[in-house]
Amino acid sequence: MADKIEFVRNHNDLSTNKGFQFEFCCNRCSTGIRTRFKPSVVGSISTALDAASSLFGGVFGSAADIGERVRSASWEKAHDEAFEEATRELKPDFIQCPRCSTWVCRKSCWNTKRGLCKGCAPDLGVEMSAAQASRSVEEVWAHAKMDEDDKKLSEGNWRETIRASCPKCEAPLATNAKFCPECGTKLKEKNLCVLCGAKLSSSAKFCPECGEKAG
Image (cartoon, rainbow, N blue to C red; front, side):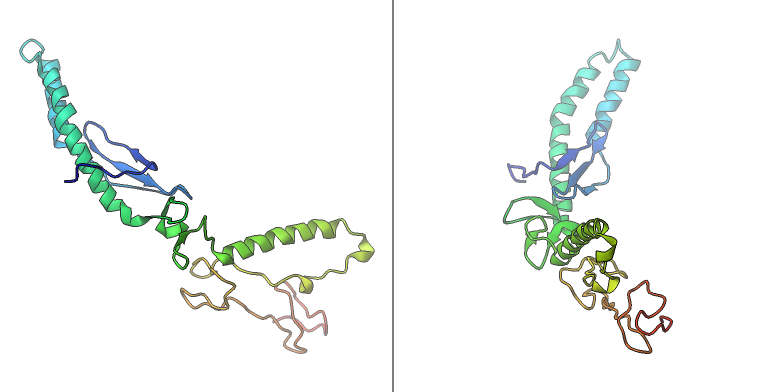
């Protein structure tokens, strides 16, 4: 066993006299993973000695002191071993960013393509979608303030929607892709009039060019 125990700040020790349990959290999204409770043999012995002291105070008057000595030595040793085991068990679920040194969860906060955490290298598809949504809100407010005679914007003039995640498998999209890299779902559907071929908005019931009923 190593003389030093490596640990990180983003963990909580939930251990008691009866056993050991630890949880580790992502520094970016705060998602946590907890080990299952592991009963402590030393803690059980200490509890039994404390109980004996309360039942037979006159005969086992020193039992509580013995229990405390057991807990302060053997329990601490068992606690260190349990902590090292928990670290080995949960470490594969986290990774340290080489740029900012932050420990993040692999599941949601690690950009595998860039080899950096998503705080340092965000998914471009997500950022593009967020930026587009923000810009759209600005345009809505600007449009609302315009004079009625100047409101010539139509749905067909708004920029093409960029998705941040696949609508089928919900995998994050790193780029403005045509197909999902995880399940292959087609992400860009062109909605055209069956009669004249004009582009239709997703909510259109009739073609604005020829009046044909949409799809």
